[in-house]
Image (cartoon, rainbow, N blue to C red):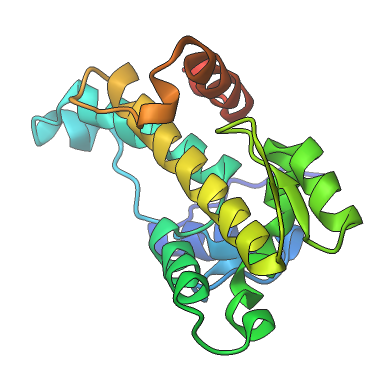
Length: 195
């Protein structure tokens, strides 16, 4: 078998990456993009240097890419779902459909809470952020689980900014010693501490 050198344009490479993501991870969540991932054009190191790119911002973008890969959902869209659940808009099962598509992510960041929720028909749940159990109706449990995913991803993005030397404010739950350990654990899971 002979090897060939093939030149690809940037758009060809983007199409290949999109197809690989789509085939390996399934059809996307909410955004119309494969698995909810938005593929952006990347700058080469030479382009960054030529435009006077800031090292901290480049590091931040790289760390945020790891966060987005670890928790591939759009925070704003999931926040819209949380707002609708909280307001009691529509039929609950219809409103939470976007969350149901990504609920397995909850198992990744909170296996105990996820097992508790699924075994009780979403009547009980334990939050990794507050370390407290929530019981009651499924609306309360879904809302807490959705807010946990949003809170964890938001905190990881803030930690990425902090690690890059940019101004960042961690959420209140992540400021305690225990909260810091929990956030550091999620940062390790996302690969932030390997940067």
